[in-house]
Each structure stands twice: as structure tokens, then as C-alpha cells.
Image 1 (cartoon, one colour):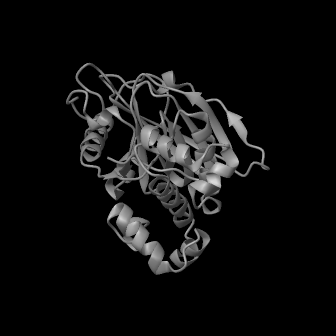
Image 2: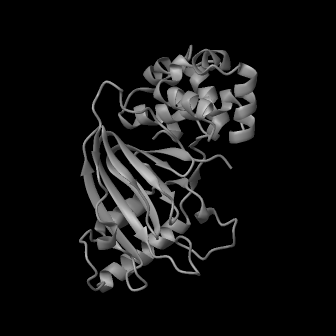
Length: 283
């Protein structure tokens, strides 16, 4: 199954502020309080340093857009989506535009690897993935206390946590995501495409910048990422489109900015990739 999505990095000529993560232990979930919430407002071009947690995490933006790089993938987080990160997976947050980030921490034990029981090594909760955020889920999370510290859970918190876990079990996964390779040459090309996907149309373009032949790059895409360059680039374009759509940019403008000759050509690409038209997928 395709992994979740990516987006453009801040322009290299703009300074990116780096900030440490808020002490996660202050929000540690427990058997008594299995769902804890944290809120944080972040400015555009801010990056949260690499870190990990011994529990699972669900992150989404109340407002704004952030990019999360976790494991070997990079994901876009607009208000309509959330990224699930399993316990122990190092991740980095880059703020694309001013955002209020809401994070849920979920209690983990030998019986649970997410909001539900583990189903063995193939449990979907063992991998990073993007999920839809329903209106109900959003309202439930907004009602959950964001105060740090151990404390005691109220009856209201118990009820909200149970509803959040149930809603999360039924959240629909979204086939968005950009995997990142290990090979340094291919990684350099992938980062350049994420930076400016419109500039890179073919592997010949990439070969001129990396020093590797188109044939070598094609082999690396197949062996490291299990896909072709064009299929991988389409995921990057979808992520870029998702970022623009979150800013309320019209679809006709998005299709032109991404280099499509017409809105209908862009619509056809989106339908092929996610099985839905842009008007439904990006709202």
C-alpha cells in the first residue's frame, strides 16, 4: 500500500528556526489516562528537532500546514489529515505555514500498538500512515485537556478518550506519501524534486544533476523505493497540490502551477492516483 505524503521545503534563502520538542514526559499516556493531548503554535519555517517517543503519536494541524518526516517517509499534515507515528520512530517537524499543531499520545503495552490490539507484525498501526480527520474526531480532540503533568483523569476525559479511540479505529487511511531512499545520489535527487517538483520532469534531468546515469537512477528507484520515477514524482505533485489546496488556491491555478496543460489533465492524474476527483480529495 502506498505510504502517505510530502511537500516543498522552505526556500533555502530563508532562515529556518530550529526548536526543541516540548518535554514529552509531561504528557506521557498511562493505562489510567490512555490518550493525552498537547497543543503547540508554530511559526512558518520553524523546525522541531529530531525526536521519538516510547508511545504512539497522532499529529494534525488545527490550522496551517506542517510536514513530518518519519522513518523513511515524509508526510504533509493539513487540517483535514493526520499522521500516525508508531512508538520509537524518530521524526522531524517542518512548519510550512503558521500552524497550531495538536498531538495525541496513545498508551502502549504488549497488547496494544495503536488505538487497537496488535494483529501481529502486519498490523497497520506498526507503520506510519496518513488518516482522514473527521469532523467528530476534530471536535473530540479539541475538547480533550492539554494540561501537562500526571494528574487524575476526570469522567469526562475517560469518555472523550474512549470516543477518540473508537473514531480513530474507523479513520480512513489516505494513499498519500513519499518514501525516501538510502542511496545518497538518489536521496539528493528526491530532495531536489520535493523542493521543486515542476523543475524535474524526467530521469535525464536528474542524471545531469547527480552524475548517475538515467539507467542507474531507474534501477535505484525500483530497488529502493519499489516504484518508477514518474510514479514517485506524482506523489510529490499530489503533496504539493494538497499544500496549495489548504491555502484555498483554486484548482485551475494549482494545475497550472504544477505544470499541467489543463485542469482536466490534472484531474485525470488525481483520479488515477487516489481514485477521486480533486474537488473531493482536496476538500
